[in-house]
Image (cartoon, rainbow, N blue to C red; front, side, top):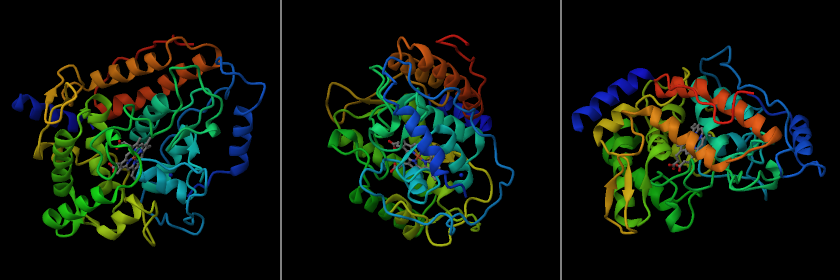
Length: 379
Ligand code: HEM
């Protein structure tokens, strides 16, 4: 990962998890968080949430669309959201089929079913949990807000799930529309058609890194031209480039040597939230490899449209970018402090633990030893 950032730094300088979760454990946890004696002042929740799982022993390819994980359509009340990876894991029972899980369960699942590299999985999952999860109950929704994550923490914290715009979820997605247009989380056929069109034009009918670079650039230009509130900085800047390489790294069958995704498989993941038949996970633990290649195709600095006008993009020099990755860590901490200005009791203890568990992921993913911060103390 550090090599990646060295690469990107140079560039910018020049330019200027088969585990079905035991439902009874899940149920117990839900009962605990929904205990009527609990209250929203920070005293409810799960005591001592577990540390994030380490890497699994076996990290080769294997069949993951197996008998233990049959696909089932979401039922009424099940949460699904903007992440085709997590949606697929829920629909196959790698996390609870209702789309609500703990960070540890999510990390185990992405490792098991997609062979996501351990530190990367920790970074992404804890990031989502810190911004969108219920820190007291240790539960996070992969879609919208739900009472299944337990009583709300005191505002402005929201525990709203992946769908909350401007936290993790952001503009210029590949198959999800910008929040400005109303629905930021559902599969969007028009956008998917564009992915298919570019895969035909640049990838001979497959989504590969060249297509990823072209599509990333085009969706950015489309958002600049149509969304007066377009914003693309800090967390969103990093996640968007990562997510553009995910289909190549995670959705291509692990037995294939060529890293290119056919359109039936793409539709299966993005639209149907389903593994293709007989799907094998990646042959090696993998993260956002390929990011520097797609960035280099059409380098783009963080910023957004200003003054509520389309075609009015301005670079935001205060935003984190690939040359200053620790600024991303700072930005995340500032958002957490805004969400939890004055946490008390168990909520505060869990926050301290969560931030500490997040940090090994920060160092590994950002490629820098960003100095660990303790906004709520160490104990
Ligand atoms: C490790 C925990 C993960 C978390 C917390 C997470 C969360 C999210 C969130 C919140 C988004 C919406 C961001 C946005 O585009 O606005 C997203 C998008 C996406 N995720 Fe995940 N994700 C995770 C793992 C994965 C995995 C394992 C895959 C692939 C197997 C994946 C594939 C994608 C893709 C392709 C998108 C972009 C969708 C699009 O732009 O149309 N994610 N993810």
